[in-house]
Image (tube, rainbow, N blue to C red; front, side):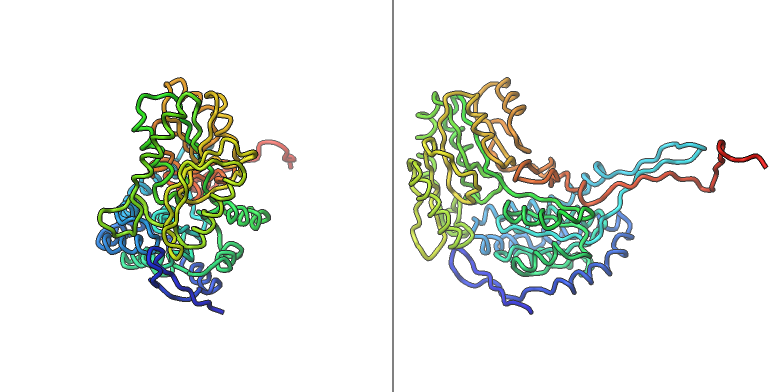
Length: 470
C-alpha cells in the first residue's frame, strides 16, 4: 500500500513536494525488462546519452540549484557547486571507465587469444543521502549507466524533490525511463530494494547504522555487489605552524561547511600543547563571524540550517550530553528559533571526557582534544572505528610522511581541509566508513565485473597423454 510523503523546506517549514511511496516489485520488474537492451547499447551510445544528460542539467542549472538549496537548507552558492559537480561527473566517469575497465587481448596457446572484457551487473539500486542529494547518488548512477547497468534510484525521504528532478534530467536526455527509475519511500522501500532477489547490486551512501544493516542483510548473498560509504568521525591534527589564520580557516572549512553535514567533515580537532592557546582562540574568533542564514539571504551565508528539527534536537542534546561528561564549552551551540533547525557553529573541549563517544555527530559540532605531542596526536586520531578522512595541519614533510603512513583513513590530506575530495580520485574509507569499495573515480570498479576469455575462431585441440592405442 502506497504511503503519502511530504517534503518541507527546512529553512522555512513550507511544503515543497508531496507524493507517494513506490512499488518495489513493479519497479524492479520494469528494470529487469530494460536491462538486456540497455547493456547491448554500444558504449559510445551510452556515453553520448550521459553527455546529453549533462547538457540538460546545464540547461536547468539555476532552477536545479535553487531546488537543492530549498530542500536541503544549504546556501545557494553551495547548491550551485553541487550542480556543477553533477555536470562534471560525466566526463570524469567516461575517463574512469576507460582506465579502470579497459579491454585487453593477448596471444594465447595454439595461436589463440586471451581476452579481458567487463560486463555490467544488471539492476543496481542506488540509495541516496540528503546532504548532497544530487551529487552523491549521481556519482553512482553515471558510472553504473555507462557500464551498461540499469538503475533504480531511491532518494532520501528527506530530499525527494531533488531526486525526482535529477531523474527527470536523464529522461529529458532520452535515457529510457525504465533504465533509470526514481522510487520514493522510507526505510521499508529501501529494505525492499536491498532484499529483492532481482536486484544485482546495492550502492549506498548514508549512516553507519544503515550501512551495517544492509551488510548484515546481504551477508548470505555474496552474488550481490555492495558498495557502502558510511561517513566518519574524522580527525584534523594540528602541529606547529606560523600560519595561524590560514590554519583556522582550514579547520573552519573542515568542520562547518554544509553545517557540518558532510561525511568528510572534521569532528575532532586534535592539537598539540604548543599550539593549543594559539589555534583554539583563532578558530573561535573566526567561527563567531560565520553567517548562518536561509539559503537565499543577502549577504550569502557561510552555512544554512541542518536538515530538520529532529536532527537539530539530537545535536543540541548531544552537545549537552558531552558537557555532562566533562566537556568544556568553548563556543556554545545556539538555536535562535526552536521551530526551525538553524544551529550556530559549536566548539567543545573534549580533552577531559573519559571514553569519548565514537559516533558521527552529523552537524556543526567540533570537539577539541589536547595532546602532549605528535605521537599521541596520531594515537588519538586513530582512536575511532571509522576511517574516512583525516588531515594534518602544520608540521614538516617528514611529519606528513609519518601521518600518511600511520593514520587509518581512505583520504589523508596535508594543510588542506578534511572535506572537498576530488571526483578524479577514489573516495572511500575503512572500518565503519566503508567496505573497501571506494567511489568517485573508482566507482567504475564496482559497476562492472571482469570476464576473462580464451578464444579461437575454430576448435583446435589434441589429447597427448592417457589415451589407449587401438
